[in-house]
Image (cartoon, rainbow, N blue to C red):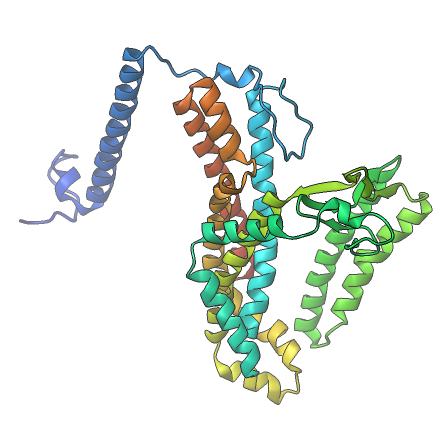
Length: 406
């Protein structure tokens, strides 16, 4: 069979060129594949609608506006049983995002520390980290969630044990944190007049830290002079916010938990289910991140470390300025997958009674309304949007740290 690669000189365009002409063949195949895919999707949707019609059901999302008639024990926004199913779903979504964000932060910290320590020349330290990594990676995450939940619920720290002069237990951090078998009570911020100015100053400080980091790196690349980044960034982080805080008369207060009756009152209450889910997901994902960090560091040639040592650089600066910047291009892509896995694994919250998106929209709302198809579609869409947001943000960061080739 002859493949036509040049346009015909004796005539115009012919339909056979869509198959035999290499200029059009790939496009033709893609169009045919797209049409086939859309036909399959249309068939599945039509078949679903017909079957629902036979059962006397239709696809209707009006149930989101009706009263939910159930309570949620852990919530970040005001909610009661008279609110709509839509608000209940938003409460569950925020609970999911809370665990996902806190989990990604803690897992990253644990993973970086464990990954670096696994490369330590200290035999005991390296072996302890190896035991941690292998233990958490090779046991299902659900078992770790249940194990952490058992630890929290079985601890002998009842609220009544904090009472009186002969109290068996005491609060932590200058009597501001109470850890009990019912949950953990931490201080809660009290927002007063002008408190928004303190928050704005804090956010501007974070922006200032980022801008200073960029300036410091450009200066280092141009002159070779390294500024005391840690202390300057710490000053930018602390000083402006404290100055505004005291000048405005301390507009942000703290409400400390206090033992009243048979339980603590005041502050912020963190349920054991939330803590167990958060810590289990963090330590489990942190074990995988540790291996990613370790492999990223090992991917850098040992000659890089030897060259920096020959220039008189300390090991800490070698790691921060030479090894890690180059290792990020290896670390970031698989790190994105771990963040996505942690977010999706948070749907196991139902095992310990933490009310997340799976428990509200995909659980109680689904069972009480009978709208299983609509609830599942909405839940899948929300998880998809969250995952795509995480992936897009991390891919943007990955592009900003990759090596710039000449």
